[in-house]
Image (cartoon, rainbow, N blue to C red):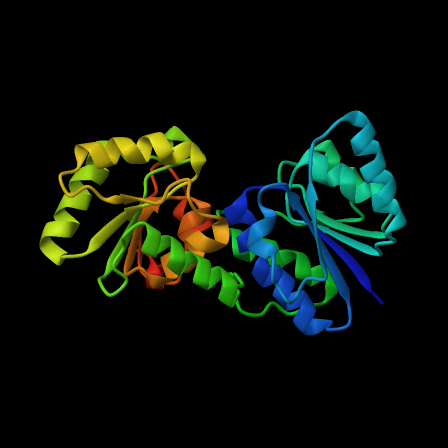
Length: 291
């Protein structure tokens, strides 16, 4: 019986968050199993505090020596099952090199990496939401899929630090907040900055709300450009929050407007997403909170 599982998801923040329903389903079916998750460095924050995981491994590319040491350590962990949710060459190789007797993964492109798995998850015609696709790996294990809602754990300390940051920025928490998230990993997912500036002004004048501009360190210049263009001078939080702080701030907001990104998945309230040239069935969040 499976006792020591490694789940691999070497993608971006949103992809890691979308894997949490799969983790939760495994733990619910096998509460005594040990679950370790391997993710890219920089995405591990969304998993901290997740009570369904026993360990999180953040993978660095590093030097050849460092990679060799990592691989040797991986084999010593004695995983009996590896579930690769990445659908990539590197993760397939790591699945194989782990030495686990059971290795389950995707090979939708029918590439050579399928040889690294003991079982590949069959391709499904048509586009599917990433959560539903990930949950397909449970079938070979005989596990029933549970709730499809992504899950992010916030501690009281993280909630408090978000409140303190809002106070420092002069945000009145008694007033409604709207978050604009203009940054996008790919240009074709982005909405023009002048549109965000216009939207900030309309939201402020028509709904008497406070508009915040979120994003990573790479989005600071874009946020400043929007602020300079907008008459309402929205408050910039881009580059000033951790993932968990941003999630806590998002939880307090009335609306999120942004591109298809991990940030859109961090919230539970209504969203408006700019999904340009993106397959909605594969990448969008649930329609109940997507507008």
